[in-house]
Length: 226
Ligand code: IYR
Image 1 (cartoon, helix red, strand yellow):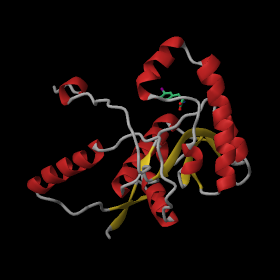
Image 2: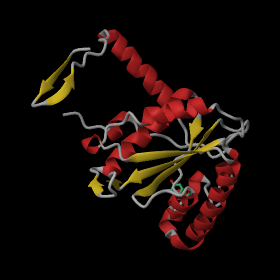
Image 3: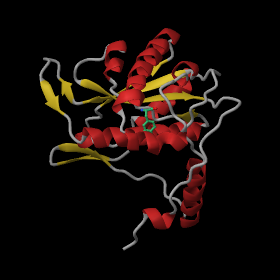
Image 4: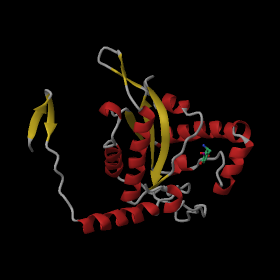
């Protein structure tokens, strides 16, 4: 690979293999078709998955772009049934309070057609939980704070890539956001510069798995072409 210095910094010549226009079109259609089959799933099978698969999915998420390339994320992979039980218990406690007291009438109304409630059995049934933490700042070797940039955006992109890698592998997930989420920092013993961002159960769908009959907006609804 060719390399050189620009303004004193190392650069590499980037020349990925080029594809034909026809190949690019076909690949884009195939990927859309694969991704359009994705559904948020709440009925999980307890069928195990190889940790290698989960590691590959997380590695893929770690390819995301981030502000100043700080990669301000930690992906906690949880397989231990005891930890999963603790997470379920704590999440259900918060969710019960949310559904019964904290969420507005409008919010509850907006969720009705999705059939959600405070109970989260999938947090124990799914073979893996991936708990994503954002690093609000970094700590250097001397314990000094170092800034991170566009942390929300960076994490959103990384989680998007994580979800697409899960779909690509043939598995299912749910973007679960129990609220508030600080119990995750305690259970997983995370340092103070990390804040919980998203909790994703990952697995196979249950043999009987129902998803709401909802529809995606079409091209015209989501696009303006200039
Ligand atoms: N966090 C709750 C509520 C919830 C909120 C939204 I916005 C959803 O799209 C779905 C659920 C829960 O996980 O049940």
